[in-house]
Length: 76
Image (cartoon, rainbow, N blue to C red; front, side, top):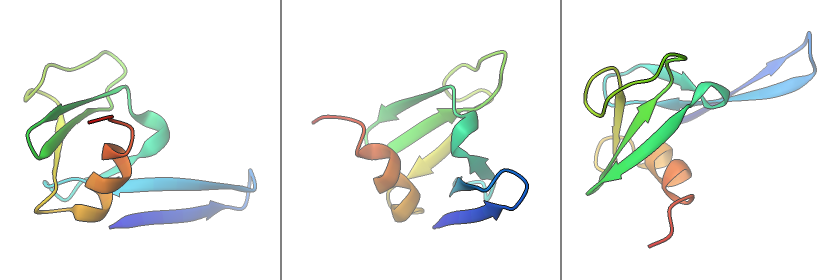
């Protein structure tokens, strides 16, 4: 599921993604994304993350809209 919110202060649309742990991730805060099989691991911490530690997982089977939106940046 993709969420969009209009920010009336800046007149910008902010886009969010839903992770498998039901956390909502602001797209502008994403530092890196690593693809492993049918899941994407997303780091949004300013001081970095290790895969599986401090990352959010978005799997195709659990959150197809969020997965597809990020996955389009990976070339097969």
